[in-house]
Length: 168
Image (cartoon, rainbow, N blue to C red; front, side, top):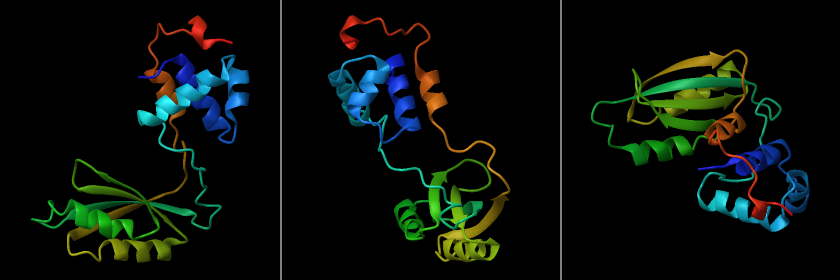
């Protein structure tokens, strides 16, 4: 569970990932040790997984985004580890999710062009566990990947930052 201070800290670091602990504490109006302790707790609990840079795939030379639905062959559903390892070997694959509906997996792919996307799809289908794929191409991204609004929504409505131990 996160509180309002956690949410403010996460929002601040999402906006400025290179911001130091001292500057974050100054902007939030809390002690440096409080910010460090909060960061440590958020990482230990898995709420904050990393501080990696956000990469723009288009600027990297991969302007095409595709969503590939993968249907597994009958009897292959139990091969999760093998199919995941197969997909992990394809660098253009950004995410893989097990889903409900007509397919078994939803795969987000970045490609250099439509023909490059076809190459990636062929590679995905190169495993015997894959029965078929269906692909849609994203024309534009209306809302990019985000988490800060979700973090803010996770804060209890009656939470406030009046706890004296949090302030300098």
